[in-house]
Image (cartoon, rainbow, N blue to C red; front, side, top):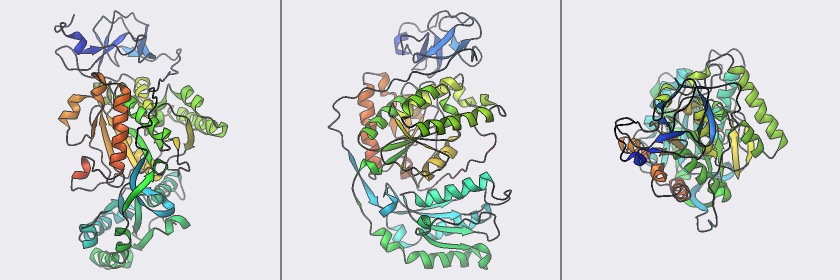
Length: 490
């Protein structure tokens, strides 16, 4: 028996009647937040249930209050892991706001932030991009206005084997970033001899306000001056665009989790899923991704895809991952940090991760970075579970807002598309207070999922309308641009 058993109900909770485990919601001498503990004596071979779904089998006899982890909970290939996912019930939510204030970017959509991108075509041009970014920020129209200069640098762009898949993906991502509603102009810099001879589509070409290569100049300073002379003439028109009211069919939210713990699937992810159901009910849209973290939810997803061609496209993606995972070690996901936070295997992690998408129908299936063509509904985009890479694809697909859940904590930020960081537990929210925007652990107290999801929904609209996220109060501007280089990434 645990040493502290007088207030056990404040430390451990049994979330679902079918579960044979407790979840720790408060650190104590014998228990750690997010971890699982046996509700009763469990025999070797018994199924382990969390949130009413099987997440594994006992590898040995487990005593009551003993921790359940990757060492005593395994996966049986003989069992089915088809999750039943319950959405949050909403009724008569007509009092909710159904609009936000954004910047009109013409045929490219509505922006939540007004940005000028400086894009490197190849890693050899990264230094030039940094110098140009710094010089642009000294221009009065930018220094004293609401235009953000965002550098897009990466380690790719040359050394590719002809027109290989990685080069194709890089070019798709660059074009997607230019076409994103938050981009009001793009400066493209190459070295001059790279294999990434990026040719813009007719649509993205209209947003390119400067393009050149370093090999045409005697120095970075000469190149930078040339950029400033050209770009300065375009800034007044961009600066004159002001926020105005738009419907939520102009808001597309990327859904992401990183540094997940055992509470993520109980607090942050279902709360976000509820907020996304409200967003879609009010004509908004969202993109769910991280394909390896859908294991156990494939049947649920198939039932939520009304279009036959989209169902086939989704299963093609799943089959491709099944074949690829025969070549790499899926035990790398969950990560070491996920396991320390209470997640035992990929099925338990997936059970929490897929709840970010709520219970809405899946109206669109996309390849990584493929442009979204719907303005209302839920999209699924193929990606690895590595969150900065997955988010790069979602932004290229058109997301102009990001909701990012975390239990262990994350410092991820993106100055191009604002990031709302949502914590699964109060301890981490307080410890990393300068990284977090919303605490979903309130559902562990007296508040209902419905109330907290409504609160988050309202905050999404506030942040989309210009309220600074916690990271936007910092002076450092970042945009992690991580192409998916095909290989062993899960």
